[in-house]
Image (cartoon, rainbow, N blue to C red; front, side, top):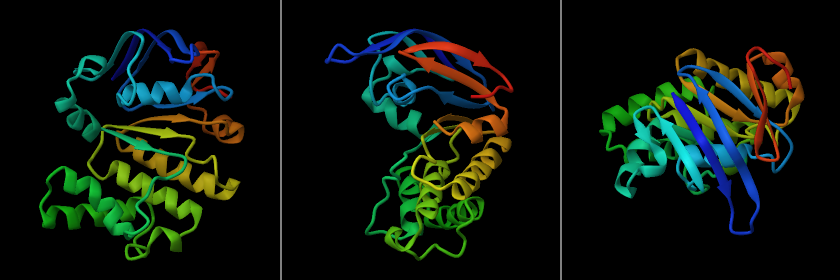
Length: 224
């Protein structure tokens, strides 16, 4: 469960990114966050992982009140909430396997556990034959799949995806969506910020539209 209560975010530039946001995302949902650039989509995702703090209001992820967490508690939150970036943020000097292993090493997993989990993750993101490749040897779509694999490696309960298909062609974008949909069907809550009209209209999931920092539309089985 993710809950926003009376949340606002104002940046030092005096830009109001979010204004009086009240919304709840249930466990296991797949939700598209849509709206023009600057509408507040990325800000919402960044608030959930406490990369930034709200100017007012409260944010909850399950039992955690995110904006009240101590710095020492943040690693526990981020074990449960994975984040997929549009620009991948992979370690270019490490292989696919090593990039995914980073998440598991942080969790203190044993070598046996890490090896087993990496094989599972590579299968989920359809990269079983790419484990020894470096990011520079992969297509953009494959790099995004590595990023997804790294995000879910620790058995996260929530997966946040910020424009994960923004740099990809239509065919590759659909491949990414199929993977995200499969992850969601296995019980992971997925929140995806996107501008891709075709994907949103075809998937018919819950759609939350933002404009100028406010929620102006929220409907299940909806369109862009």
